[in-house]
Image (tube, rainbow, N blue to C red; front, side):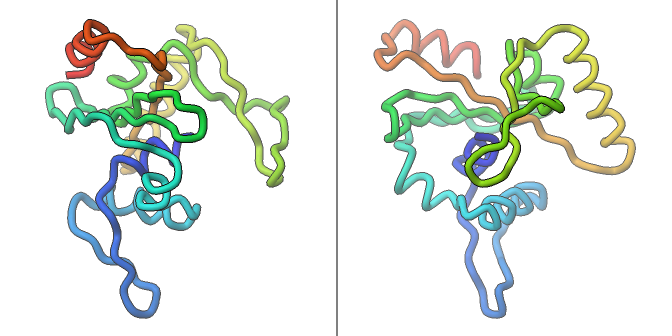
Length: 165
């Protein structure tokens, strides 16, 4: 899901000769696009095959995040997809995907994280990890999603916009 969250918020890459990629914009955004392409999940494919665009809340420097809303064609569920500064995105979360030694192996041989409640101890661990990576000169982004009810009322849409903007 995390690559989905990131990919649907990107500008498309252009494949150049000799398998070199070219795009414009923030280097972090470009790196995330390359990751999505390497995972065979480019935006065009996700939007064409999986997601229908609903709304966008562009990056806001005071909020340190951006959000898009898509409806999945696979299950018809509207999803809020957010990326931004870890401390900001984490403050919106109630659960997280967590890798532990007991995680299950999926059909492709990868590890499937379990979804666990985000308690204070886990939140502190995530923020400390973020701080350690940042000290090493790495750019760290948090990705989050939330499923909405299929029938979102106009009042709920207004509340959603107020909370995310």
